[in-house]
Image 1 (cartoon, rainbow, N blue to C red):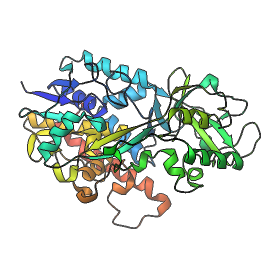
Image 2 (image 1 turned 90 degrees about the horizontal axis):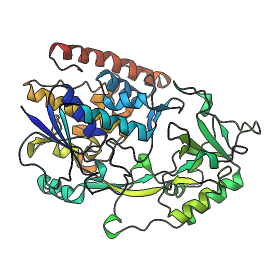
Image 3 (image 1 turned 180 degrees about the horizontal axis):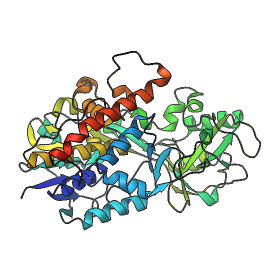
Image 4 (image 1 turned 60 degrees about the vertical axis):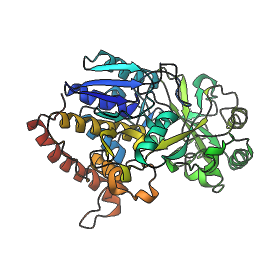
Length: 450
């Protein structure tokens, strides 16, 4: 029987492993964490560990592209979405999870599956034969990255990604902060009070911005100096450098929030989102940073409500790596120069936990179909899956390829004019119709979820 070798136990690798195993295919899943090796950002050896955030972003499938992708993944039997739903935390209309329980759930289900062998080992070279999925993510070990570079004939691209601090809830002064979701929006597990909000007046905000600009930053190594940031995960001090009002229209925007203590709107607001099921840890939303730890602690405690805050984790910075997928991969995610190898997840240049898992799901399905002598039908570009895959494999300009979250800008335009305020609902309505038509024949071909 064919055995598929998957390198990397992150969200893409675990999703691909699950899809293959459920299709009756034997899988060897290699993960270097737990073998004595660790990445600069991970803290455990758990599979599908969430690093930067505990949020899968919006779960709104009616008006949001990532929410639409959530639903399509659920329809295709995604283990990532199943465990995400099982360990959901209150976060308004977003899908946030308890990161520890989520990782433990994924790890346990894969460990218990008879078709999956999990091996704690570091792979330094691309296999010369055998069906392989490389899902090592943006923190690919240097030795394997060099092997990928040798196989592709060009250097991998790279960018910086930053991590937000996490505070202990009982150290937050709730006589100053208050609980509220923006616009009081209520999610499936929430009550309209899913975020902790810390208010700032203009003087406090201006002083905070100056502190961001003046604070001591992490030094770059020589090989990092020309590495760009990814726009979707920009360090807060880099955003501040773009203009004093940038953050008030970004992660510190006050709109839709009213101070429960005063009945007034603040000049700026810092939000924290629940990070674990116990509700003891809260993630500072959008506060990715490369400030040094001492400078972080000093500056964050100038935020009203956080004067005495204690932090379970400070922010950090790490270098990410991805390949020039439009140039190197075919539409089946195969390496053109070595078609027995497929790539999946963030190493392909998709960005975000959900997108990474979605690509892993598709690649797993493609390999399972190949083993069965079938061709897995490519999802229409009008669906979230199709839009994302099309961007990775050819929708982007290979000369200037950058990481991308799923968004409606990747979807084909409408043939007829649609009013701007109706456009999001129109995208999702069209996607659901086309997804259903694409999905229906899978059952007759034996390619449906188990």
